[in-house]
Image (tube, rainbow, N blue to C red):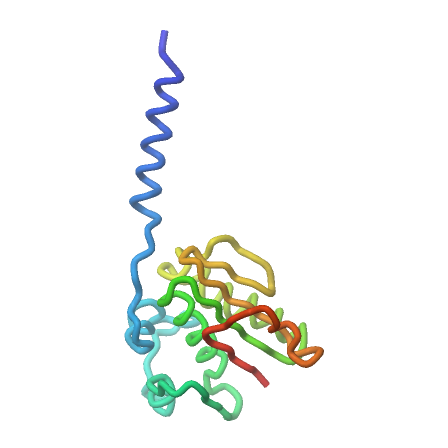
Length: 171
């Protein structure tokens, strides 16, 4: 007769060892352009390069605390926003970052399509950082960082009680 208790303990130990070995988060580069080349070289099934949009290079390299980006349509503003949010949240453990927009529909679209799916779930490196799918207003990461997505209704009250390292105001 086989001892199932012994087998169960052995199996649990093997599973724990496997999960520990394969679920460790590798540190990501701490400079944003290095981070882009390593962690997010493909966006929406297209390999990234800055040949057609070289004006983004000085913006990405600017270390000033306050930046304002004004531009026309289809110049990768949403991609830049997701880059800044994901870079800060994944390269610095335990931080809070916040994205603020004007209405709930815009928030939901950006949260689901651009950030959760386009930035994290479809990316083999960044998907390892997601703790769970989360909701529209908060994305929790395994490195104890959190991305908050809020609207600016009621004089930015949705930001109260948060201490974001990075705050992006959209439109």
